Length: 237
Image 1 (cartoon, rainbow, N blue to C red):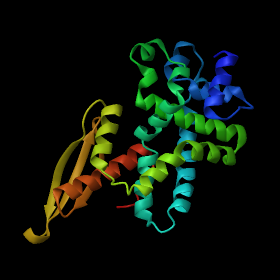
Image 2 (cartoon, helix red, strand yellow):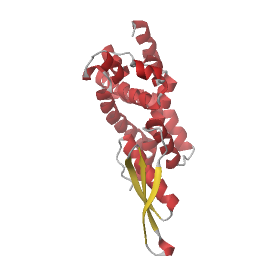
Image 3 (tube, one colour):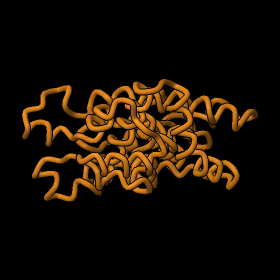
Image 4 (cartoon, rainbow, N blue to C red):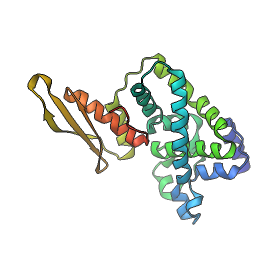
């Protein structure tokens, strides 16, 4: 990336890196690193790992302060939506991150600059890069600047958490298929039935949930699956 492009991106991020190499690494996809023999330290997967944790912590702190009367379960639901691939990729699109990614030829040809998974991963890597470059306060400022408006809109609008719709979008983006719901057990008398539902996608079970109706059980299972995909604790179950 030329120096003028670095400065252009820094303006979009509203952050100037003391160590520009961290930004370069955050923008480098594994496909590019492999083609150019850059090694493990040459791509953004390790930064993505760290950024996921930093993001979870800061969003948790932010929404706890924003919603002082909300129970733990509601906070978990809100966090799962905020840190989801869909949410992260939308922020990345707003910032124009896709145009600055270093991609291998295959990813370039298949529209990698607009893939939600790649954009979300790059977003987490950038958060880690800012954290390593300047510490937690700057990472907090960056996340607040880019996520606060959306979070407040969710809260003030009384966001209805339609976990099934959110999971459908995530599965289509990540696995290229829709999630499959299966009732694996029914228990209790007819007037107090409890349904246990299991969700599969991408060749594995993503989550399980229970409810007094199939619809409630599916929503619960979708919530668990979303939290698992986002890497956060599925504590509201």
